[in-house]
Every structure is written in C-alpha cells, then in structure tokens.
Length: 189
Image (cartoon, one colour):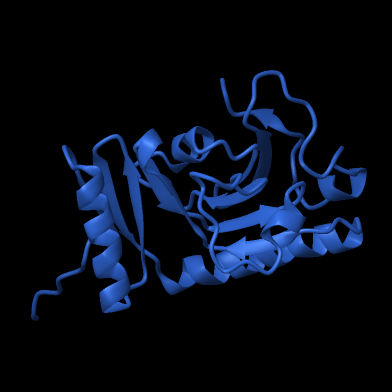
C-alpha cells in the first residue's frame, strides 16, 4: 500500500518580523491561496482553511445576521477582513467581523485601515480546531470590543473589557438561550 502524506493543518514559525508577516500575506494573495495567517509578536502561523470551516463560518455568520435582523440592529458585515496593526505587532484575518456602533463609518467602504479607523465592533471566532497562535489575544490587542467564540459546540459571547456584562447588541434575549448562546463572559480574565 502506498504511503499517504497529509499536509499539516498549520505551521508556526517563531522569531519572525513584521516584514515576514507582510511577505507571507503578499504571497498568499499572489498565489490565491486559502489560509489564515496569524501574527503575534514574532510568532507567525499559517493555517489551512478547509471547506468544513468555510461552511461553518457561513452558517454561524448567517445566524448572527439573522439575530441582528430579528432585533432590527443595523450592522455591516465585513466578512473575513484582514485586521492588523504594525504598531501593536499583531494581525490576523477575521473569521467574520461586524460593524454595529460604527456601522455608518464602514458602510460601503472597500478598505478599512485599523491604524486610522476603529476595529469591527464584533468578531466571530471559530476555535475548532484551536489555532496554535492565540487569535483571541490578537483580537483583544486590536481593540475589538466583542468576541463571540465557537468551540465546536457552543457560541460564547464575551466582552473585551474587565467586568463587562452587556454585549454589542444589548442584553441577550431569553430566546437566544435556546440556541445555546451563553451570557457574556469576561475575556480579559
């Protein structure tokens, strides 16, 4: 029986520079590849985006969009937007991002620069499988105020500030509990 070789799901390189991160992003675009590039203070992870993750991202994004439509909350979904800041020495591509409080600023724009524009108000982070470089730490450093994490079973909304009790949508309605959406948790702990 011939041996089968499987490409690893991700690779992490340590001791990388911001220029290395930019180079990998440029090569990804040039080659038209589908993978996440996560960078945090010299740790550079390149992770494959498989079709199951893409379907899951679309499904969860649809649920969040339906939630906003049901609550009549104006929002602009920016999809898997690249979020990076050289001054913070970190960056990643969102699974899904939404502008809610800053929806008017983002509406209709093709490019947002986080060095000058506010970050998305909400990030949906899929942690199945869990990345080697902690993406939630990067999201918090970038100042995204709310991060909803999906671990393969449950969506857990959380605020990026100590002692926060509300989310970007206001209080989570009791009907959302039927969808196994927990009350917000403090991600800064």
